Length: 175
Image 1 (cartoon, rainbow, N blue to C red):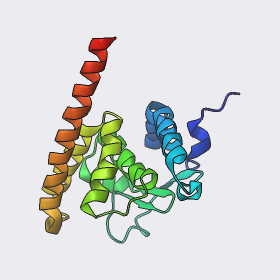
Image 2 (cartoon, rainbow, N blue to C red):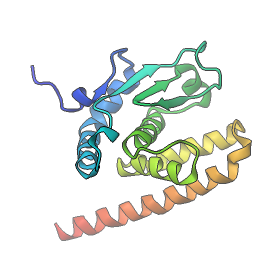
Image 3 (cartoon, rainbow, N blue to C red):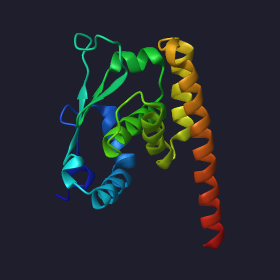
């Protein structure tokens, strides 16, 4: 049996169906980006060999996180995904964002770090879905103290998504 390349880098041992779908759709593109970044890294140990997706139980979720990254693991709270009303594509954008933190070696909640992580979603064509996620977070009033930073992230995503779309249109015109 042929093992997809992404199955060697991204582990979903708990068989979270949303993660399976995400990896089927975006796994190869993520592996390519992962390999590009590893080639550029001065210290190859900066990027983990594997990234694991893990369910986040209510008992462990003291801050009511939807998705959280810790080291090379991405924890997902199905209850909070449901409470926020995220669609599958929006959840995929969130997963891409968290992978962006790992692949770009950023630390959450610094504005530059959040933009960098958001760019991973945009690179996968999920920029509009990430905007929808941020709008839902703002509407939930869960993070009122960072609303202005969330609005700046929407503006950044609109700008980068427009830039990516312009580049794709130009490339198709040359082909």
